[in-house]
Amino acid sequence: MARSPGGGAESAAHGAGAAHHTHGPARDAEWDVVVVGAGAAGLNAALVLARARRRVAVIDGGAPRNAPADRMHGFLSRDGMPPAALLEVGRTELAAYGAELINGRATEITPDLGVRLAGGPELRARRVLVATGLRDELPDLPGLRERWGRDLLHCPYCHGYEVRDRPLGVLGSHPGSVHQALLLRQWSDDVVLFPHRLDPSDEERERLAARGVRIAEGTVKRLVVDDDRLRGVELAEGHVVPRAAVFVFPRMVPHDTLLTALGCARNEDGWVRTDTSGRTSVPGVWAAGNVADPRAQVVTAAGMGAAAAFALNLDLVEEDVERAVAERRATVGAHR
Image (cartoon, rainbow, N blue to C red):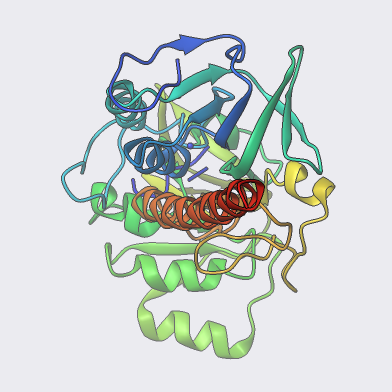
């Protein structure tokens, strides 16, 4: 699945060399870029930066959003690959370029771009990229969390093909659930919307009926599971509607505390504001992947990481040039 349930996703030396995983930061003084988050966005950014001969450290918190998923889809050349395998390949590729992968959790970014780790010292950086992803909050119903990423799904583009032509359900957990049901009709002619606590408008009901989506009125009580397989959706009055898979629109909550605590501005929708390269309103700080865009799939997040890396390196080049010019002027002036 391209955006999987659960998205969000490195001894530093210039040039080639064997990188290694550590449980604490290296002893060196300053990193060009510290990347917080080792998902697709963070790892791809680190790869581009390391190939640009930047000193890069990647903080890996070890809790990827798509951990519950068996496969990801919609990623050219990686379709059907387990998400964990993609991350492992990414780490292996980084090993050729000397990026440092640090197992730990970042707790704070200081105004002078120090990255503090839980139970550890502070990493000093010239620039910081936050790629910490998001978490999916599910409705509080029995059986949902246990089936998440299996037969309780989210993105039709990520999962629809695998459950094509089967009886599908959509749990009304979000205003976008009606659109989700209309979209899923593309993969199956047997789609049922369970409004649950939603109240679709007359226009929405007309659109659903025209699309061939049925509505099962009533409050959902639980998912019915037997022999480790989803069998249906039970309503409060006791009726069970047989379903092979159920889609739900989770509440997506960005892991953006590091950014907001630093004072990064937000958009009207509450998400941290970035430009097209991922630059935030705080100088020296970028964001990429699901922490900045809830719609980003794995392939999209990887692209966002690459775009941020290009911008980060150019920003550092400008600083390097300005520093070199100042040093040259000081040297020339001293010899006059």
